[in-house]
Image (cartoon, rainbow, N blue to C red; front, side):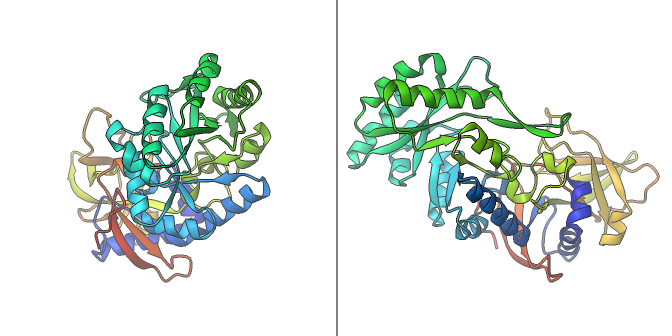
Length: 391
């Protein structure tokens, strides 16, 4: 999905990835992250958010909850993270990263509420009165009042499979009144997902019905319950291209993730300020019946893989682009297949992919590399897919 643009805009990253793999410093099934460009992307995103008076939480699940990158992003002013689940919140907190939002997309399990409240997140997103009550009771025990966001849903909203849940807008006033009576929590905002999506046919980022639900919910809470809302949080496709749209609809918080690595869908069609800064490295394991098989473990089914580069150095790789055989979602990704056709492919050669991923759901390793832009790549460290340093 992002191979062509990575070749065109950050071929140095590909060069470094092939070099480190052939040298034996990284294994197949490793994501290589270009630290310098990630930091530059974050700076550009922060500047655009400041211009539009939008506050940001960083999303780190796409980069494997990596604490080193999170620290660098926090140093440029995006100093709190949105944790997709409580485990991510704990990983980031252990590494000194403040938590902005937790509970959206994954609610806090009952026996983890005590731990999460103790992390002092800026807000916790809740889907139900029951979860708000659990948080309230624990916050009272800890002698605090926990700010919460309500996840809201309208009848026409887009809901991804496996992400159902939230407060129906038709029942919002009633449920919010009940939550308002709880002493240990305070409703400070609303959120919905996804509020924006990239329309590949129209080649533009568009507002979803969810964004309308978000703003109508904010109106109800303000006008009907007289609540002062600090946050109208509008996640999904948050990037330099979409930040002005957040301001347009009246939102004031966003949660960029893929924008840091330049893997926002619009970037595959139209060059964006964010530079591609991530590739996936594998190796040819074996060849069978005209297909080269590369080691897997990090293939992401929604990554829209099309092609890969194969070779032992940059020049050979750029001249040897192979078509990817689509992966079946019913099978484990032990290997990924590549159509050889009339190409020459040998066991042990490096395979480079560039696609949209979610590292935290893979079994990959993550290599952080600095100095790529200056032509002096240096391996900073190797992590697992959940942010733990391996070496």
